[in-house]
Image: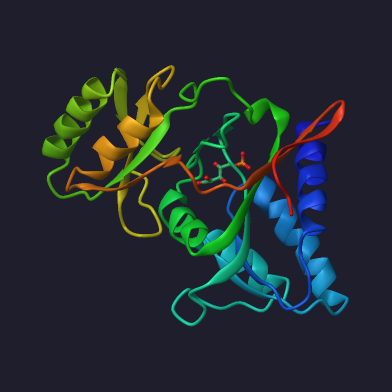
Length: 233
Ligand SMILES: O=C[C@H](O)[C@H](O)[C@H](O)COP(=O)(O)O
């Protein structure tokens, strides 16, 4: 079974959590895209939901499927967010932002009563950090921010290179919020909570891709079937 099939299986299981009248957060990425497709089919059959997206890409996909969309301003409290992840550990700590949507994803997840992660089981890790940690920064003063990030990483026992994210054409990637991303190549993160706190304290850092205490469950699809971390109910 292909990785894409596995992502779709996880998305299909997450769709079973959706009940009529729910206010949903829609994640971003190749796995969340499956969920939005499946949700669109249910909406076409008459399912009544109201959704908030985590990126312009997801917004466009959902609108194309005629999924009723709102904003966090009009709908500031959500029942459930379904989103992918770049890494998840057994404590349901995540790295997110491989698709540059971490800021809106974290805001939407924090506004949701529950967040459920969907992924293929290659995303499950014993220690976070093999996937480069995205750190969203404001362009102003980038070099000063970069040095502050390096110092914060060292203080949290996590050393590594910081790479400004670029698009395939070489230009700097600009997020939906108009910011840039530094990817921290750390190998492993011994103390995610310490690093999260240290990064959040840097003025030029808008947000980072460590999601701690936000996910309630993860649905992981593998060759042997679905594994659930946490509670789905
Ligand atoms: O910014 C992007 C998001 O955090 C994605 O949810 C994450 O990168 C996982 O994406 P995918 O499902 O494509 O692996």
